[in-house]
Length: 315
Length: 250
Image (cartoon, rainbow over all chains, first blue to last red; front, side, top):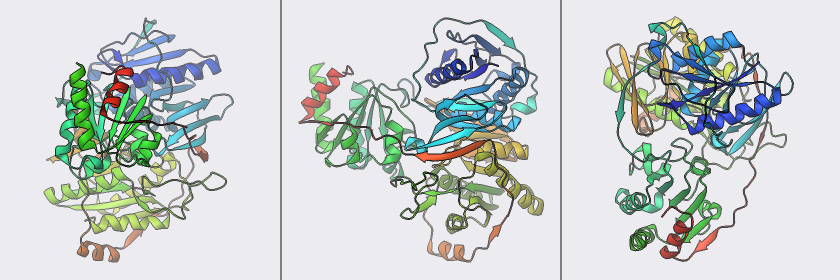
């Protein structure tokens, strides 16, 4: 019995979350003595080393992403292979497709697993709740175990190289893919908040929409993106797409610069995977300051422009 | 349009969460409760659709009797009807939750006809199972897309936008359909005084149903280990730039 791992990819480039899911799948497969087999859906095949086999699922109706369609073809592959488990990335797409699969096969599904022990019939596990501020010990009993890997918990697998590819042709009808992407609209080119190496993020302490000017300038200089806290979007200072946190975007940059952000738990869980945190705040007791690697106490309106000037001076 | 929004009562996000001694529940004595943020926005989105197209908005929840509070809150901002699937307040697994909601929706639809659109939050703030709306959609045999941050209705089609890293994807679903939405789709309004008065008189319908457990079991909660961080305090902007240089991002 194999362990299948669902791959999310953009024109053949395997997503970071998928590489984390491969690591979880490898851990489970090793404990079971099973092979790991990747599932790549769509016309574009992705080259993936490290796994034992790649199932390449193609169909004329699968040219673009369709959550229901992906769930359906995965269900057909699962019915044929009866794997011990299906592991998905803990991304929007990964959790969504896995939920379709779970609904189609009437199987339980555990989202955002941080630990999984596959010994015995009932698997024990740990998963995240509250976006990561609470953990849950749980059990999973099912013929095929469906789990997604919590983001930024498992180290991403190296996927260079290639593995034997087996084509899988599902049966699919137009009515099963009414949820296909009909259109794509690009709003911003270049650096995106989710993948930026540096995020310059602002909170209540920025004072208002115009206060973000220097933050934008600093982000631009560092090749980064601007983020913000929930207070900022609730006040209408920035669009919701800039919001970092449990109900916004999850980020994991090399450096997160938190400007005037107190660090409420729902914000913290959205950026706690950052490698280094620099806090700029007037309050030395703010949670963001006490949890940051570096902090400077002072007014954002004075410090950020001064940082911008100093960065320019050193260029 | 007939609209239904499924909501969940959760402890107010941002509150410090303490566990009961056996770790099987959250200590609720000092917590305030609210509607899970994605769902609060779903209610607002539904009310805006009602204002644009006419019709009714109903809300449905599965939870303890106290969850009536969240149903009344939705009524205070414009929902017309409310249904509670009562539980004993313990954690209900996502398969059982979906089955309970599905049973209530079938009963509501048998009486008054199908809902054109059923909205869910993308995931609940507390449990974060990412699946209840999708399971219910399959039970109803209707298309569903999650992660939605914009909805327009054009005739018999729901046009739904989903945010991506660089912009958005557009989905066109034939009605009736199900959508799981995210915070940011709409900014929730505050209740008016007349809305509050109206919500007090609202009759909450009760739908009792057996909740058969699924294959996922919660054993106990655990607080994540506190990470010991020694914050290094920097004196000024120059010192900050020194750090940026050291970290290799300059």
